[in-house]
Every structure is written in C-alpha cells, then in structure tokens.
Image (tube, rainbow, N blue to C red; front, side, top):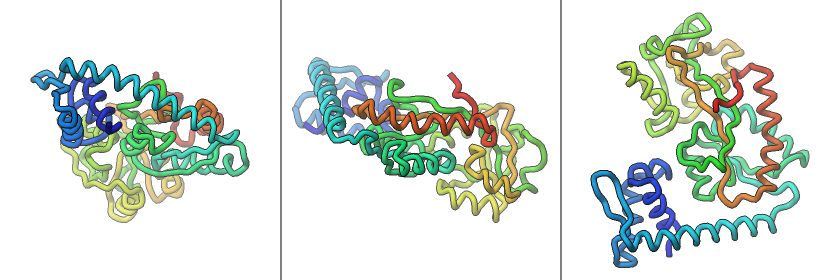
Length: 305
C-alpha cells in the first residue's frame, strides 16, 4: 500500500471534507482527490461517500480506517525507535525557519550547536505553510512557523506573539508609533503570495473592513527589501524582518492598529521525533526567545493562549 494515499484518506475522513483536509495537509484539493481515487481504484471499492455536507466513510472505508490508524501508529513507533538508536547524546536535527525568526534566532542556535550545547542543526529557510507541510511529511524534524493550521497541538509549542508593523520608506510610512489599518490600505504594498498564511490574515482584515489593497506579490525577502528601500513600497510584516534597516534609518515602522494584527511563532516537531532531540532543541531555543522578549527591541511578547 502507498502510505501517502493512506494518510490522505484518513485526513479526509477525519476532516470531514476534501477541502478541509487539503487545507490541513497544505496540498491542492485536486491532488488530494486523485490520491484517494487511486486508493479506491486499487482495492476496487468506494471508501468515501461524497455528499453536499462533505464525506462519510463507507463500510469498507470504516474497515480500512481502523487498520490504517494501527499501521501508522506502528510506523511512528518504529521511526521513534530507530531515531533513538541513531541519535548521539545531543542528536542531529533538521530545522526549518521562516525569515524573521531565522534572522533573530538561527545565529544563536548555530553558535550553540557549534559549541556542543545543542543538537547538530541543518537549517532550511522557507515560508510557514511550506515548512509546516515538510514537518508533517517527515522531511524536516522541526520548524519555526507562524500560526500553523494543521499541526497536532501535542507537537506544537507556542514561543512568542508579535504584532505586525507597516514598514517602508520614512517619507511614505510617516510619523508616529501606530497607524490605523484603514490608512495602511491606502498605501502601495508588497505582500507574500496569496496562499501564504500572513497574506491570508491581512486580506481577511481588509475584507472585514470593506477595504481594497493596492498590492504586488513578492515572497523573497531580498526582493521585498528592494521594493521597500528603492521603489517606495511598504509591507505589513514582523518588526524583526527589517530590523537592521529600520535601525539604520533606511526604513521606518509603525504598529498596525484598529485592528491590531498579531501572529504567534510556534515550534512544530514531526511525529516520531524522539523526546531527547526535542528537549535538546527546546533547551537551546527557549533562552534565546526569552532574551529577545526581555530586551523588547523586536516587540516580542509571551505567546497568546
């Protein structure tokens, strides 16, 4: 059997619809539907009954679901056992980081790793949705993600919460510590791609206020910086993403209010990661986060419940 097809089938059944399951798994709905259809075709029986309110399991689907849950539990236990055998005292670990915590936390983590004070790290930079998907698929051991939607809470540790800021050229951003979202919406913006979590939050805020955004898309931080510094655009981002440029005066920042837009950074770890390596990562990471919260320069605060 194809383990991906089994996981997809179980995700659809648990979520109650293909749409909800695709969102949780960070895959397209057509790709998800195709894999489930392939599983049904392989065994020659329908496993899910589609209807207007979503999906329910057929008798064959219920039978298979019970076996799949036991199979996946055993697979995870086997992975955990092998990880425990292969791990060194500190262990090695692949960690995904989004750009903002990557700039703030990755150097400290790497320095501690090099000094033998934490797990040996392999870092991969990406956006939150992509990194959360890679953890779910087992490609990464852990990731620092903003507000992941589809992660089991037992594998997610909130680290800090931060408000988003309007960041851009001083002459465009204007003076003051704060700016209302309605005034932000009138400015030329550059935001992440439409399928990224941060972009979805900003656009939902605009829709709720019946506002239309003047925006272009750019996900690469270097491209965003160029558009902000040299082309008069602004962005709605965590303060830490362009902290050095703000401190040097190249860019200015104002906290977005009315409403505030806050995001929480979460440490996500994959199923089957042994407790020893997870604790080693947490032991290295938490003092760094606490130090930044205490310093206050990045506007981090204790995570919202």
